[in-house]
Image (tube, rainbow, N blue to C red):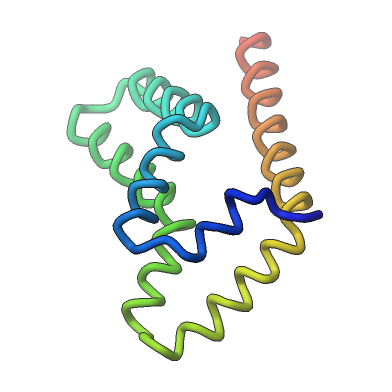
Length: 122
């Protein structure tokens, strides 16, 4: 499956422009918004202390940032040596984009259905 034209142009972005695009896409992404609301609701309903809730929120943020943070850390830690690793990862993700999205949607659907069944049975 070919990538959309706008995604192909991202390779030529400056770091600042890429960061701004990443922030914008994260902020307007309904999936991110729904997951954040679900996490905040689950944390708030847990009945834990405010400190424990803050720790849970921090863990959620760290786990959420792993997908985009790991390549950034690799780039800064390995410098030029990271190019081969990151280019290979990019190529693999481009080729398997549809499968990756299908698996993500399946996981989200299974989680939501499981939560709904759990809520209905209690």
